[in-house]
Image (cartoon, rainbow, N blue to C red; front, side, top):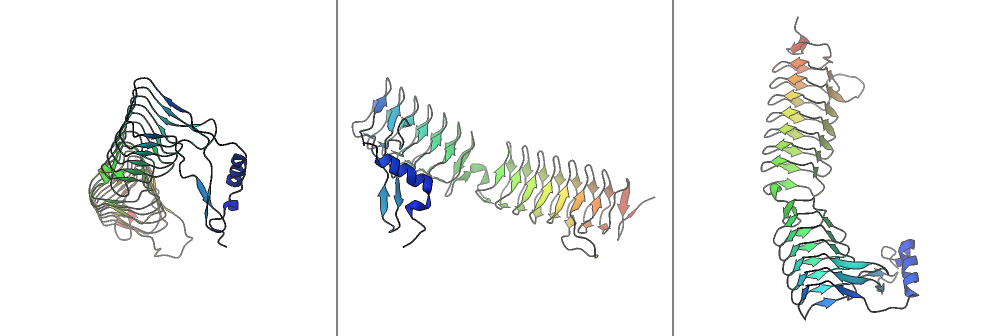
Length: 339
């Protein structure tokens, strides 16, 4: 007997099912608001797919006890289905002024806000939440428990697996922001407002980019890279992951940020700077830290585990293999402070 799908593996779910089995089943209550236009072929209140697998892998039906609420001025086209919610005292809701075209399935427990457009053959799985003033194009599929924010737009034929922020436009399979077309972007990538991004970038899972940032072309950000607000990452910049970049940092083209590097606010990194992740000297392993306001010249190499002080300037082609914390300009191989 497979335990992976066993119903009693989830005690809370099992308790709910047992409690509901004791409740008498009843037809759903369907409330339709004023001025609604409903095609005669629309089906209201049917049970959603609320079932669990038992130990023998057979589906065990979980009865539905909820209702359906259709707001004022709603239009629903032919052959669409709005399923009832699962629990007593709850309802699947379609908000005022929403337009639903033909052959749309609204799953159990869905909550659709006001003034939305939902095109033909859209499939909303259970417990989807849609805000106000959204546009969902035809042939879209939305995974269960996904939240779509106010004013969002879903492109034709998209498969939405993750939450969509307010005002965002997403498309594709799986759906990603339209600004990411031409890029390879993991669905777990998180970014703030006003992100400007070019093409041919590769952004891994677990990457976080703040507000008002610019990412040019051919940039690679690996897992664990954190970028603050107002940063500029030029073309060809690469991070090895597990690094932190502060606010208002400029990283010019073809620079490489290694693991365990911390770059504080306001740092300027010139083209082709390389942070090294392998120590050339025997010393205790520690992070490489570039303090606020520092400037690093073109083609400089920063060794593993060193500290560059606040407002320090590293000259072009310098090799930094020890801490440079005293104010001044450091040049040469190895880098020394100029008198």
